[in-house]
Length: 169
Image 1 (cartoon, one colour):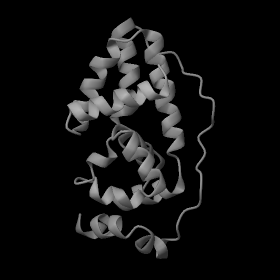
Image 2 (tube, one colour; image 1 turned 60 degrees about the vertical axis):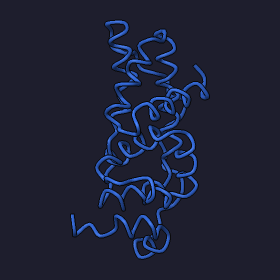
Image 3 (cartoon, rainbow, N blue to C red; image 1 turned 90 degrees about the vertical axis):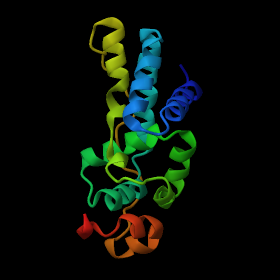
């Protein structure tokens, strides 16, 4: 499996699930089990690389607005949800996270990181064994600088307008 095939799997599962993450995970699980164990391992490695690519301060800022604060685990869940939206949304959001205001209707859904475990589960169902650790070529490092709190509203006006008032939740 290569990167293009990975994104094809993500996009097809997103389309078939109408963007409902629980359904998408089920679709992906079925699709992945049809692959060889080595292809499932390759999917996992590409998934982890995409997650590393998403570790940018601007995305953390966006996740913090959406989630009313953001821990490491919440950010990881957000990144996996973002990957599940497909290549175009993923790449566009890395450039301009404010576009998510038009993509997210439910803040909780945007924090659903179940994509994290789908390849591991598929591997277990396929082989009866736990997935071996995938060799990660890069360390998880946050790229970029956070926007100062006083500038968040101006940097991400659409996200802030939709999700910025956390006192209402």
